[in-house]
Image 1 (cartoon, rainbow, N blue to C red):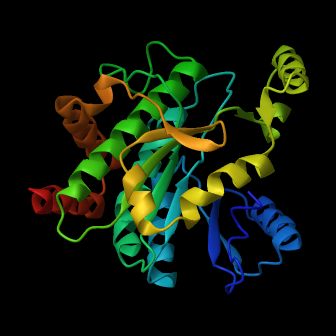
Image 2 (tube, one colour):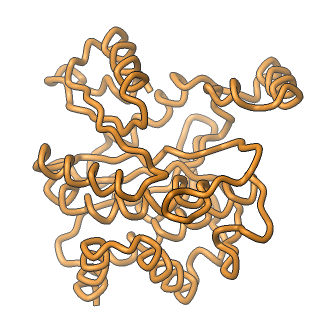
Length: 290
């Protein structure tokens, strides 16, 4: 993270904002980053992705404070959970936090990315595999946190593929949409909430070199945010990872590129958002791309 937030390369420090559920934790994170990078242009926007109303408020706040965005990192997500939690919007929390709120947020910020002079881009933190449970997307019948995570991941990859395809048909659009899988598990504060037996296994895996630090992850990912627009566009629509000191493409599942599935997910997502503005943006994007 530190490397991602220290991208000035001799130029004036760039401005960053973080979406956070907790003001206290958000401010603590900012202080930590400021001490490590000397970048004083960091702020937080309060937003709980488990509440669509919070997402709407965050969108309005971002639009009111910023005329453009150079990049967005779609990273937030729930991991381990002992039981299924339903949000105030009536959805499975993994589905809403790890995918649907990100879908809504992304569509509503595309206009700011288009205003970027350096080439707007969105980097999605995703992983391989997954399946969409079309008849039980909220997993009311069969639930596990693993199923929740994997469903959201395949949905995000399908979403970025759809965005890429639509924007390649838009005149003068220079936005890029990239899926990135971290090659190793990132050691994070998730370790504090998992059961003891899982924590023991994770500690052993860390000892065996199966984990990387957040700082190392930032070093690996930083070129995706700083490379020239032309290089970023070459990666758009692709699912990549870092191996042997270079970015390589991962062969994507055929289901991701199935047009019927893409349209079905797009339609279902808009219905679940129940937001007129988001629907209008999506319809205009589809119509203009024809």
